[in-house]
Length: 337
Image (tube, rainbow, N blue to C red; front, top):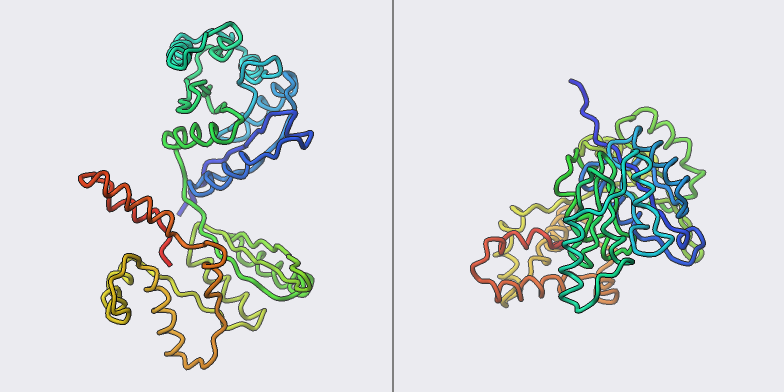
């Protein structure tokens, strides 16, 4: 059976302020996470100057190598916003005043009682033939030309544009990941991990050492499209570190089947399903005959790790929109347990 490859992507962050260290880039991190969740493999990410020649060179190089190119930065009204003209030159098309983009800007500035001057009109200059990307915040449109998606550099605006854009893009099979924390020096297990990687090429085995105060260890991250393959590698790693490791996966059915028991034990009304995973874990521990348990319980209370805030927003929405069809779907957005 022929393996279907995921689409590939390259991220280009454009801005002198990023390269100088003046501004911390968060766009790359956000897009890498989101694209991975959508089954789009990010192969490369670059940070480049606000320089027309450099942008042209890089865009013409990467657009031939990858399925999708995402750029951020350089589409504003100032003299150093040169991304639009650079993209136009890279594709050898004219940079024209887009009527639709101009209309959107006029409406936005009229509502805010601001004049649409020549400086602001610059943001309506779009490469000829490009498709506009919606910007719900400041209305300054990004654009798509062939496989290149050009977005704003301000994180809040970029995120809004990206979320709207990703809905229209062909995605692949998302990678499943599993982390194993090992209290050992990386050099102690490096050779074994190398052998496992050679044996299981379908699983990406990542080794990330850490140091916390006097404790040193390794976070081993397994990534693959196939959960069973990850489990196979996990078994081999457990043998190496001499650990009887067990993962308990809680499904929606598990929660439904056990929620009544939780209410019975709690002897009170419950509005959260979080106790179910802890109940099932405790049940498993008892069945295995373990007498002493070291647990991380309590950390969520200290570090505000619970989903209570998210759940409060869901309840507020329910009360405001009792007839909404998406009411039950909102629960899937929350991490129970």
